[in-house]
Length: 346
Image (cartoon, rainbow, N blue to C red; front, side, top):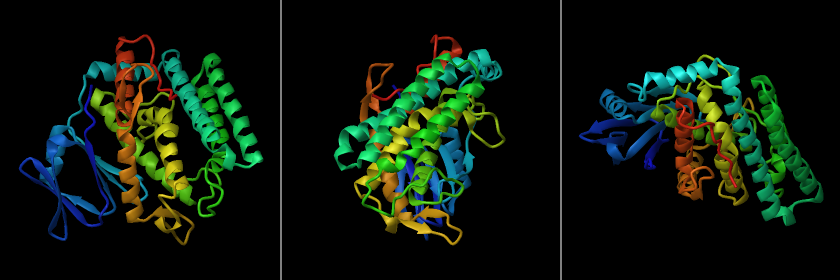
């Protein structure tokens, strides 16, 4: 089983990364702020204006350590990577499957059904744990959407085109986010969710979700590259220049489980508040540097939590699930598994 290694998140503006023997050094204004052995690292994610020496970029590339540069809101900017792992035969198979709807549909069907099931589970857990604090209208709305998501998951079983499955996925997203505000404590007016918005996020909930989705996207892309798949060529998400479509496919199963639940937990437990966000003149909302640091700590802690994988039947951390799913997809494409077992959280 793959070890869950560390990811460094560098959020301090004007930080500088350099190499010292077999360590990565983080400096701010010439003073050393951190030192981590390279063999313990899986990735380095840099926010805001962070620089890196050619030596540390080369060291990361040689060791397969993902070095990514993101904007303060989590938007992807650039990535340094070395020679791709895996073999060309797996990627050629991936490309053939992407161009053959009859082979892609069963995989996409599982992904969409799993996402709907996981969205439904988020709602069911909220009803189980917090129904006494909800209004009757909120409970009714959540129960209605829970039933509709269950029906949508069943619809995927009889859907035989990618376009139909994309439509179901879009319907599920619309239903789920139509009641997302009911999952948030009603006594905090700072966190009112008015529907999904991005590029830029227009409220605090969307800013938090977008940031967490960026973290999840980084992990999914790294997992796919680790097993030798091409993150750019997806099945559910169509090809688009500059978009890691297969990473987005893999994210769909995991968004409700990892990102959405963590966002709700941070808000409802008051671990993040209105003071942690900046509203810009045009209406865009960003998190403060301190807020990003706090969320990143919570993200790393959530990834350490254990669960029982529904297909493997083994206990593993949430952080390893994306790597397991990438490996299962690769095994299916190679013909070692009859189907792709999408991740369904119980």
